[in-house]
Length: 116
Image (cartoon, rainbow, N blue to C red; front, side, top):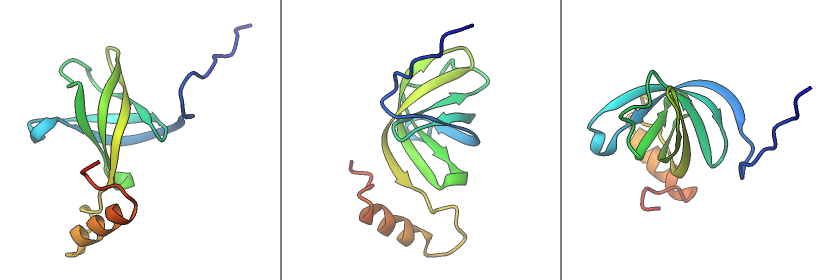
């Protein structure tokens, strides 16, 4: 009988299965990935290969309407662990012409401005 693993993370993670995109700095490239688990401070992502993933990037989870500035914490063959540096609500997927105004206002009110 195995021993249960001791959770060492600062925040508990929730198992999920969500499509996402890794956006390289300056938007120079984009990689598809899957968010496997997530917490308030980070996530585990799976992808076809972790080779070439930069140390810092933006993670876009369109289904949730959020994007996270991330720092690479752990790298495996087909998975990476990331720490969230900042989070921004992303309402730009909405078809409303005022989506940018809504997104900016919500981020301001929640203290999630990109200047953080």
